[in-house]
Image (cartoon, rainbow, N blue to C red; front, side):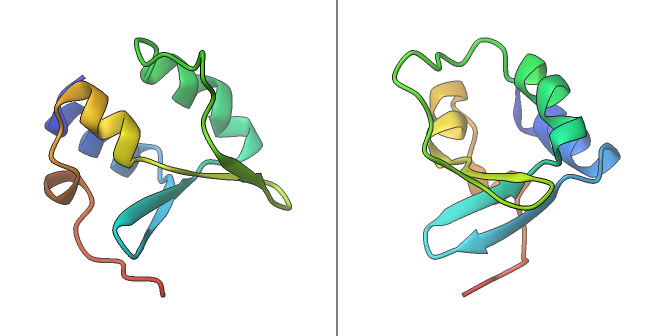
Length: 83
């Protein structure tokens, strides 16, 4: 996965996201979650990812995932401050 592939996936699937401080929080719905996990398939979830379960969606940070793939997070997630 590269920057453009991630940006296209987020945009095309209308996955909600917001910047929160130095992190980008993505909010896939339950319906989007399985496909999103397949998309980031190489990333190791062995240690888990901190997440928060909300009503109809899950929230987790993208910084660690982007670092794993060598993706500059600021090139994918532009704008959308949420503090």
